[in-house]
Structure formats: structure tokens, C-alpha cells
Image 1 (tube, rainbow, N blue to C red):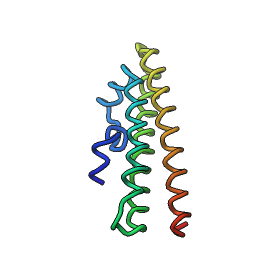
Image 2: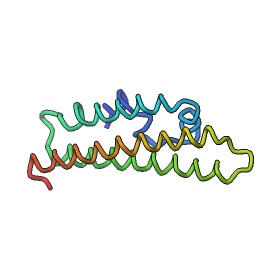
Image 3: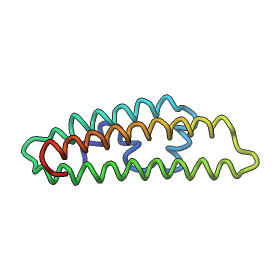
Length: 123
């Protein structure tokens, strides 16, 4: 969904190594991105007018799936860093914070989707 690009796109498209390293340096960026992601998900994705509710639900599920993939990518990076002898414990701790923030965003989005599905009888 193109609109996600404007809000929290970094966490919705897969973290990749570069983004993971960026978050490892600045977990505060992850808090802002997670907040933008949730707001975009709720206020734009789930509130679309003139779009079939089933289509909105399918798009929302796909966006949630991408967020799960991002979390998995970050957890893989944490594991790789932990296995290296010269790993930076501060970066590992920062990435663990990032995963925590993204998991909270995921939890909120899943709850919002569940409410959407119930409201429109799609559950």
C-alpha cells in the first residue's frame, strides 16, 4: 500500500542490514517510526473510504505481515551480532529495544485490525 510510505515505511518494508544498523545506533528513531506506523495504519489504512472493507482487511493483514518480517529480520541481526566475538553490546541492546518497540506497534495494529474486522462483520 503506497500510503504507508509516508508514515513508518522503514518498519513496514523489512529492516535489512542497513536499517538495522541505523536503529542500532539510534533506537529513538525506532520509537518515532513505530508511532508513525501505528498512526498511518489506523488513521489512513483502516479509515479508507470508497474501498471495499475486505480489500482494506487484506491490505492491513499484508502490512502486519511485513512488520512481523521486519521484527524477524532484526532478531536475526541480533543473533548474528551475539555470535561474533567483537560484537558491540550497546548495539545489541539498542536493537533489542527496537524489537520491543516494534512488537508493541505490532500488538496495537493487530488489535486495531481485530476491531475493524468485528465492526464490519469480517471476523
